[in-house]
Image (cartoon, rainbow, N blue to C red; front, side, top):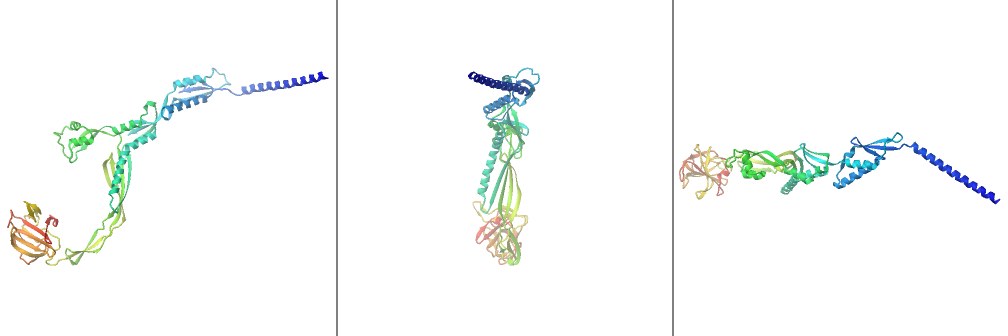
Length: 474
């Protein structure tokens, strides 16, 4: 009985083992079938259309490429990197077809490493189409160009502060300054070898130092060869050599000189626009009034100033003035003019306070002031016209001989003014006569202390000698 039980147990184990074996065999067989049903790929690698080798997976090459780019970026200050690896091409080979040869990932990487040529994206600055330098990137180029503009913008800002500080009471000013280059400036992205990228400072110095350019200069008043040489920072001998017509350094205003000077590669044009609100004078309206004595004025209505807004535009090139103009003018508040009555009534014997020339077509030979060590209290006139006329309405207060003056006439204009006419050859009025402006009162002569035929003319106001030329228009 016991022996039968053992036999049955052994038989059960054999069945279990057999079943497990069958399952394993089935799995192995199905696995081989699955593997055979899946295609196996290889990838041929081409660089610039030349076959480099075969790899099992393109990702191996792509990861190596990314690592090299990152390494190069760190080495060259994190510039944007490019290389001939951008021409890589992968061609898949289907393993179900006849496969000639094997893949070798390491050999392909080694071959690519030998063929690798790096380049870097950089920014080229061109001025009027001519390359001026290559810098790291567009941000570096823009900052460099701003450095070229900055001194001229700063000078304009200083000028703005000066304008605002000098603005008088009741004026308000707003200033806007812009800067641009007179040349065409382009920033072009390009790929270059590592050694072609320059420090920004080197390119900036090249732009500022510039190159020799021919210049034609017009001589201004007060200039000489040495001053012109100093202004343009050239040797005086250079100016002489380029202008052989100059003899003994003699130059004249308006003369043109030709020579060469170092000029920056870029010229900066600043446009300063400032808007100012300023007062407008009220102005005066004169109304004739026949009831008022001539020379008398009366204010009828006081005026009021107005306001206007004026916008000016000043253009400078490299700090030198180029043009200035008014670009806009707007009336903010119209002025109200002052109304004045002007008397026209002539009262016999009373002057107007406005004096006419006592001689026709006169020439001044001696003015009011110090002469020959003493005061000369009048103005001397000569003319081919010998007639002497009253300078204003009045009454003759003296007519006759006066020491030093010879034949002399004094007219009291009854308004605080007196006029004196000396050295006459003939006196045509008597004391107490009333005269009107322009009446003939005598003839020019050379009586008294005189060195020749002329008229000595004086104006006295409230007892004080006046300069006649301040009252007359000769």
